[in-house]
Length: 149
Image (cartoon, rainbow, N blue to C red):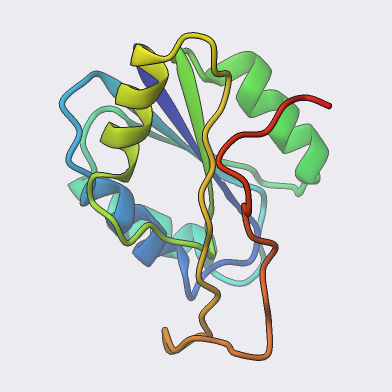
């Protein structure tokens, strides 16, 4: 398994479908899996997922929790018990990817540069209508390379 994608969700009813569709739109030519952790949301997120589930490929797996276990426990469960890929990608369920070659380029970079342990990129913050939020500046990756220091 080359890549494991973790989608973490709690109360993301309005956004989860767009997040999942952005993964489906990725141009991936390697083996990957997608794990969607739905952490007992009371807002109807599980119903949205159950509606989408029949059209998802077999490499998509949804964890439906009856009770919220919290972000840290969910994160631990995903990264220690479920994800089997050589590389991991995380997508918060209220986010989505806009570049269809994002994962392909990132995996190709990591494969050809074993001295690197991670990749990152800048983001654009948008409101619920997809319009840029000019009042919110997300921290940018200003350097081309970072060290653990």
